[in-house]
Image (cartoon, rainbow, N blue to C red; front, side, top):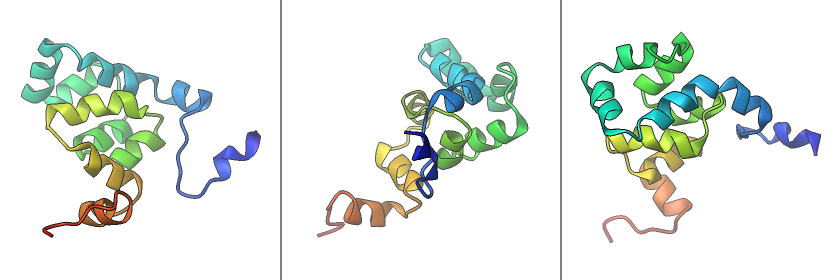
Length: 116
């Protein structure tokens, strides 16, 4: 099915995305090692530079723009490793992917009542 790229506002992770996001995914996967998490926390820019990330990729990571990381070819499985360093709840990433506020996402997508 070749028209899967036409789903509005939905960056899909396919072969082309995998190739495009190789450096970003390699960097994120490396965060599985404790020493790399320490390096990332100590000097995020230097850590990202060591993987040869583009300015666009570095900006997406440093601003925690989850939607942009996926658009650039990031695989959500690997990107979640970045969220574990902060830590960022997975629901915040889901909200960013859906282009929604966190509370709106919890209510609309997950059926959660907030403060009630």
